[in-house]
Image (cartoon, rainbow over all chains, first blue to last red; front, side, top):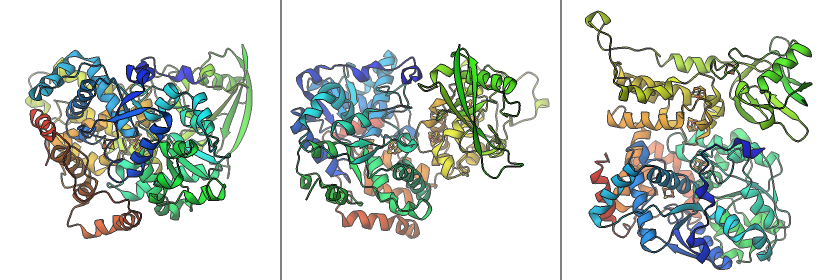
Length: 316
Length: 319
Ligand code: SF4
Ligand code: SF4
Ligand code: SF4
Ligand code: SF4
Ligand code: FES
């Protein structure tokens, strides 16, 4: 059923088996938020990589991907900034750039698509990169860690690595937007019937909750524009999740995390208290793979996820 | 032929207090469109089932509805792409609208926002001053044709999560249609139009791409970005939070290569807007307590001068 809903121009490179994947050595683009207010995401990603036996080589000189914001100012700058990042990956012999933020994923893939689809745009970018001696040859694929887990590690292997299964913890997957939409850019799975997060939740011993809010926006990008609207978007989605039995939420995006973790309290007046703890994808997977809970930065969350882990007898 | 069960939302605002559902079984080929399935149900089983339609070929924009959780044109949706294993299709009115009768909804909020655009050309001089027709070059026209394909079906409006919590937001279709006039070389009201749509919360779009499912490929999400760029280029209402936010993010990426979370909060809300800052303060304090505050000072990324070279080469505005 879902296959028929995919656009014809599905970008199959999302499933490409890269050389980086074959060697287990990936370019790694953490993004700004994982280096600033969500450091626990960066740290748990590195701990997870260790457990998975893969090497994430951080592109330390990479710039911000431009998020959805610099596009509002100039139509070319995000494309060229990201071409610079891809050139850095290529120079290190890496053809795969792994992200841990949905907004990075969506915008970096969009930039790459624009470059790969038009020689003119590629030449335009390279003319600017040339001013400092860099070139992008178009060899890079941008993928999210979530896709790496499923395509490169594989759900069966992941299941076999679990040492601390989640005991049927009821987890609401929260995809948000930019890891699935627009499908013509992401296309790893159907944006209307995604199941990657559910698959991972089940592989690590949790129970995935289904609810309509899982593919809806968290409002992060308009928090500073009108915070009550953003809070209501969080409240609406978390209300649905809780009504369907969720005990916790899992998200592949630190921006979604900031919104869901930060704004449930503000949304309570209209949507009732939900207080659902939100896990970053690598936090919960690393936990199931045996990384000690106290190394995952769970204490940094506004809604403390340790409470539910204690209740479910997953930690003491 | 297949037996398809249409599970239809039923409600008549004139008599009902609460809606109910009717299951209607029709025997039709599975490739039939949902609209034709509804027509069969209406003709053969229950003549009172109400829904809007006219063209049956995705041109009139009447038949948008929610089909097994997915909003789109019923006349463009074959049953076999949406029915579940049991051959059932759940049909509801489009979300974000008040139901009137069954699948017919009150469209007024959608039309109101459209009417506010003054959706007709307003040239800067009178027609009598023109000896010939007003000409548009093929290149200038190319920018408009995709948006002109909008059939005002409101699918995008129904899908928009911002509309669902803030009905004051213009919504995707109206902003896309504003673009159609803003970028029309014959129009003389460009700045006024940008101001009007900015006041109707242009900058409240959350960039979620839900409206990328427009059945006519208008891609309102991309047109919204075009209108924002037009606002910055023409410097319309630059003191509002939206353009300030865009520019402060851009400025700091140029300066340090990264997004600067602390600076962008102060820069967007306004350093001297004490009330605004106090409003985000409780969240800030909660975050600080958890050691979650973004750093006050950011070290530039290595080779940040390369980033600045890119910004300069493209003449990107940063204020
Ligand atoms: S999307 Fe956000 S976190 Fe990712 S690089 Fe861009 S600004 Fe930074
Ligand atoms: S869900 Fe939120 S953070 Fe995630 S992509 Fe959408 S708006 Fe951005
Ligand atoms: S933009 Fe597309 S979805 Fe929105 S009203 Fe127009 S045709 Fe319908
Ligand atoms: S991209 Fe903007 S206008 Fe389109 S659905 Fe999302 S919030 Fe609404
Ligand atoms: S009946 Fe005209 S668009 Fe569907």
